[in-house]
Structures are given as structure tokens and as C-alpha cells.
Length: 282
Image 1 (cartoon, rainbow, N blue to C red):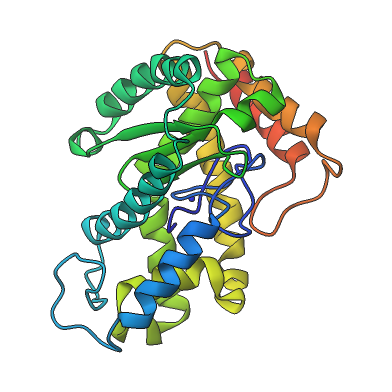
Image 2 (cartoon, rainbow, N blue to C red):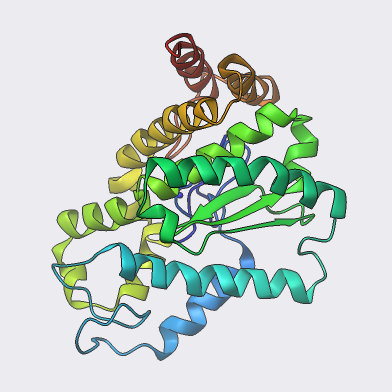
């Protein structure tokens, strides 16, 4: 995911925002939408160079105690803005059949995640859908998901494969990948410690130098979300090899299946890893 950054199969690629067919994350979509980019720019124009005490808000100064609550607060601002944009454009939850399908598959997965992680059970989870073709699938920190009907239709996903997409995104959130990414950014570039959190949120998806430093972690987190998501969905009752079929479709849809993305492992390597993970589930 991050900012909304991470998504599934793609889980999308980092590009403009947050997640895609080779999605990303994590904790946010791998493809940041144009609307989010505009929002970030507007926010940064009015942010002070430093903020007072830590309070878990968008403009809070970073501290050595950067935690999940602060990350979730920032993610909620971004997610709510994107949801508002889609609602205004009448593109939010606008395909009733697809929305019902996603909710039917997502709710048992969320229930399983709550059993696995009682803390995550207290989060205000949301699962929305859209027919916006520019979106794919992604999760924001704290359990805010968005899934595009276009991505699912393009890959002709079965219910099990859609469950894999959702479980991958849920895993990004439960594994606190956004928090870990921000902490790694602070370790790599301590100067961010004295700046507003919103500026770091923006930088992890738009500062090319910082993104390059974080790319190895991004690839690692994608593989972690693949594995943890597959295991989560299997515990919720889905057949492991049917779940792994999602990654086969990523390979089939890719023009370069053996090539890694900026912050994503190659589709072929993910397909191999998914088959191995499925084989190991008894």
C-alpha cells in the first residue's frame, strides 16, 4: 500500500498513486489518482513548516512515537477525499451487482482478520467499489478499501480470485505496512522527523529519491501481503489453489511477466510464490 499506496495483484504499480493490476498496497493504492495528487498539493500549500505537539492529525509534527493511530488519521483524510470525489461523480458503489458481490466476499474475510488480530477488529473498516476505470484495488491504513469493477472485469476474476485481491489488501492493512514504510522513511531520512506528517505522506509516493530508497521494502511487503492474504483467505474457507489463480491471471495479462516493477516483484515470481504458499497449506 502507504498514503493509500498499496494494492493487490498489482497490486498496482506505484505510479500516480496507489494500486493496480499488479497492484500495490499497501496500504494505499498503487496508483494515486489525479484527485489525490491535487488534494495533496492543496494541503501542502497551507501546511506550516513545523507543527506543534503530536496529536494524531494530518498536520501533526512527526515524533519518535509515530504510531498506527497517526498513520490511520492521515489515511482517513485521503480516503474520505477520494470517496467524496467518486460519490460526486456518481461512480461510488454505483454497480449494485458488483458492490453486492464484493461485500459478500469481503465480509467473511474481515471477520477472519478480526479473529486473527483483535486490535484490527476495532478499526472502522470500509469497503467501497467503483466503476472508475482509472482505479484498481487498494487499501489505506486502518482498513479502508476500494475495488474497481474495471480491474475485476479486465482479468475476468472468479469469486476465489476476487477474494485473493481483497485478502491481499486486507493483509496490507493488518500487517501495518504503511506504518512500517513511514518508519523506514524516517530511518533513511531523519530530517523528515521535524516536518508535518502530511508532507511525509506525500513524499513516499511522489519524491523519486525517497521512493527509490523504499522500493526494496515495497517489494518485500507485496510478497508478504500475497502470502498473508492467501493464508487469511484459506482460513476463511477459500481453496488455496483457487486463490493462487489470481496470480496466474496477472501473468497472462502482463506483457513482461518476468520483469519486476518499481516496487513490485514480477508477476511470474508472485505466481510461483503463490503456488508454493498454496501447496504448504494443509
